[in-house]
Image (tube, rainbow over all chains, first blue to last red):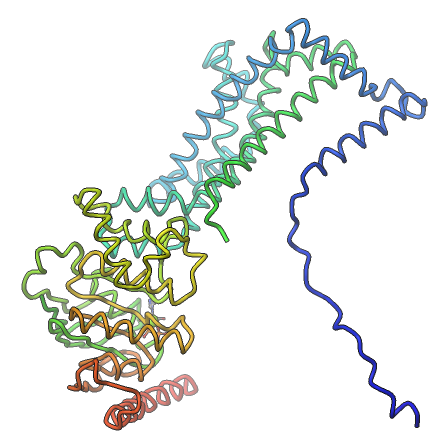
Length: 269
Length: 255
Ligand SMILES: Nc1ncnc2c1ncn2[C@@H]1O[C@H](COP(=O)(O)OP(=O)(O)OP(=O)(O)O)[C@@H](O)[C@H]1O
Ligand SMILES: [Mg+2]
């Protein structure tokens, strides 16, 4: 009966918590990206990736250098940025305004929700020829396309966010006799901000896609035109240089919104 | 200013929630409303505060609120209803911003009510950094800031633990003793009711009617938990409530 007399075995309670809460690790994203590029570089140099399928990343970087030196990088980048900025500005501000109206007014909701639902799934690129007729071949039609494309997702995100604002806070505002305008500005708007900002991420990504599409269909300068030209010449280095610009644009936009979120939503638990 | 509730009835759809309520809310006194869950206490308070339109009858305001009163009927909510993106001081200042007060006057009021609720050290904190009891004190400070003629409190202490509740009851009694305010205080906690109420109204199960009204004359500051008289009152109220709650349960079984 030695076993019965032995001390009961002692061991720590197994840990089962943790997880489900990803944290940001600074620089890890860059490590993944650079690692991938190094593998491709090595693959193309060693010959197990055909140079017809992928360019060497170092060649793409060299192309960037040339683009920068000739000034063509900026000749393409600035028109694209201004189109994206103008189009998204119009689309997002109109979208937030309409989203608020749908979120706050019965008649706007009844009248506009079906309309937005009808517009949302229409591929906006298909409407570019129409926009060219309406707004001309110049910048205006490109603004319109990007504005239209960012408008619908912003509306849907905004009115969803307004619907989700804590009603007890609004009732509190009313019980203290705050004006309608105060309640909207000081309670509904900040309360809807998290939803609006996460909608903005999607809207702006759609904006970048539409920017390229518009520039492919009718522009001499712009990242989209540059990519189209490179593609038709099967110039892989330049094609990938163009794609890289778009990716960087995407990263900058997403990081920018992340910054705004950290700033405006510090109050969140 | 006094309030009187006259022959008030209210329902949602086919469900009658309140039936024939007559109440008088005299100035400088705390009226407690108790009753079984779902009997319409919160609804009654919303009707009194003008957040909902009565189905029948009316809530009347007798006399004028004092001149420096910014919001005559002021609520204190069970879940505090603080704006999470504003600091303590800004949450209080929110309800003053719609009034022409001037920056200095507003800052003075905010500082005064935060001092009265012992929150001066937390003026810059966000709600998420506060304990439940402190959050409710912020809500009380916010209510005091508008100098209400009548405070409408819907189970203000129900979200708090027992110790915090005791401390806040003491706070409320101290506030009232220093400057008597008029209040309607909804609760289902009878010991709160007998400690804070000058008059306690018991509502019946739904549809809520006034079952009985009890007046307690002991001054608020002199009531302590061991008081035999209060004990007796509380037992009596509990007997009434228990009957109603039992009957409400039996109804559910019969259905
Ligand atoms: N907006 C509403 N629409 C429909 N029914 C409602 C509404 N508000 C309350 N009710 C119903 O009215 C009845 C009374 O609700 P009320 O919240 O006033 O009760 P209460 O006495 O405050 O209950 P509790 O003690 O649980 O807080 C309940 O049966 C509830 O379902
Ligand atoms: Mg209630």
